[in-house]
Image (cartoon, rainbow over all chains, first blue to last red; front, side, top):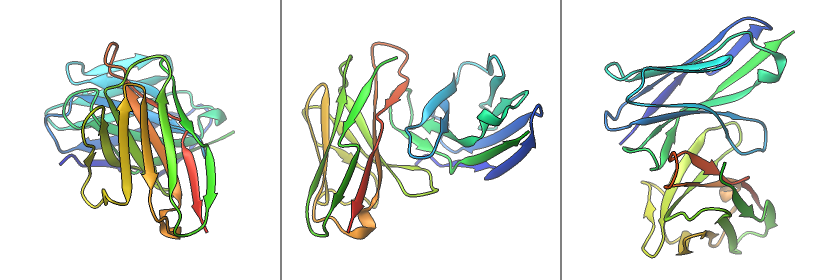
Length: 113
Length: 116
């Protein structure tokens, strides 16, 4: 079945710096890769997603890149702010989009001012 | 975006009792819903896929007789934790994909279960 690895588990940056979180997946049939931000005790919030027919997607300070051949996808946050501090999860669909998601173990991002 | 609700948000029960958690899609129909469990400081783990009108599909290691799933309508799936024990204490989250749209998954707010 699908397996998703996420690195690093913790990441500390200074305000204004960039943060990069990387994930790999195992199932070549996966075609949907969302990223979530989760605050303590709350539901995951989708921050950006990418489908397998696209290599890169950007939304203001957040971007995601996908390398299907290598089965890698990465989250890039530029100009980080203290409010970006949270746990971030990558996920991959089990096969087609709209199916269940397998999550990475999460990255705790701390942005200090 | 589409809205998914969950009830209750928090429940405390005694060991050996059963607890039912409801997951509703409020403004769309969901033939498929998903149940996840999240232990403190860990990731979301898929427990099962709930299919409207048919049996749920459980992930390896999840006991189907302990975690009963019923998806009786296109807007409601329920998860019943039977004979709950302290090790079942966790954050249970459901999700559903709106098949009419982008197939983005929408998560419920979660249910915090504490078994004493």
